[in-house]
Image (tube, rainbow, N blue to C red; front, side, top):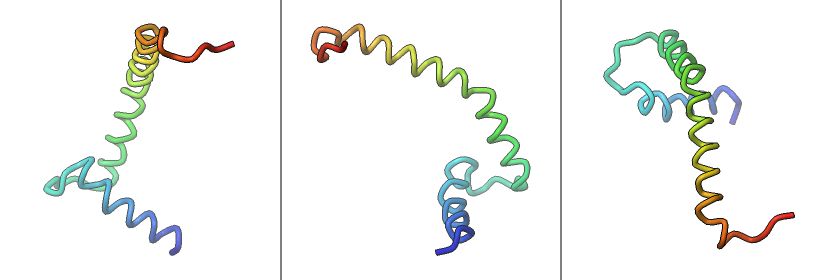
Length: 68
């Protein structure tokens, strides 16, 4: 399987989930919107993940194994 076949397979799986099958948008606009969303919300998602990780560590500190 060549790399271009893999890209086509990934596109067939991801595009309907990200955009929807009935969207009448060009591929360029979909790419710009997806990358813009990642760049805008990426730091927010990372901050939420780090916060939840810290809350989990504090909530289950008694049951987690000790670290050095």
